[in-house]
Length: 109
Image 1: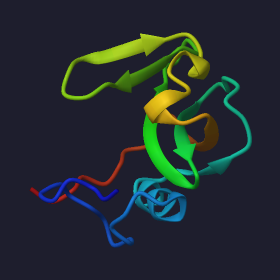
Image 2 (image 1 turned 90 degrees about the vertical axis):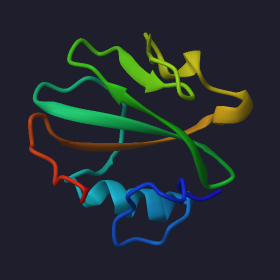
Image 3 (image 1 turned 120 degrees about the horizontal axis):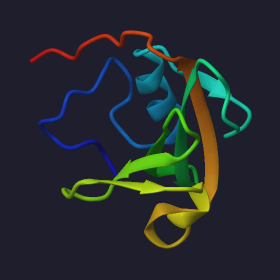
Image 4 (image 1 turned 180 degrees about the vertical axis):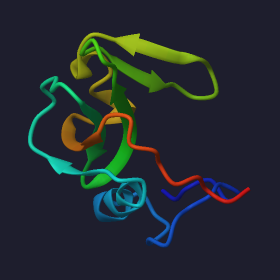
């Protein structure tokens, strides 16, 4: 699995292996963290994996719920990460975090 052909991809290997996706998130200030627990002032992303391949990502909202993009449709809200776990999204999680409100680098247009 690779990123969409015409999508921006940073200076990281262009595939969906965990190390490559972590590298891509690092370019906008994220680093690995241990848990999904809500922390004041911290923005978190959960990566859903199957056999070391990132299948999906969810963003933690300020109230502790999660938001995901499902296909080309609208974002969906879910109270737990397990709400989308299994099937095509995988059941293993890795977490990334950065200070909330940190301005990400804008990809080129």
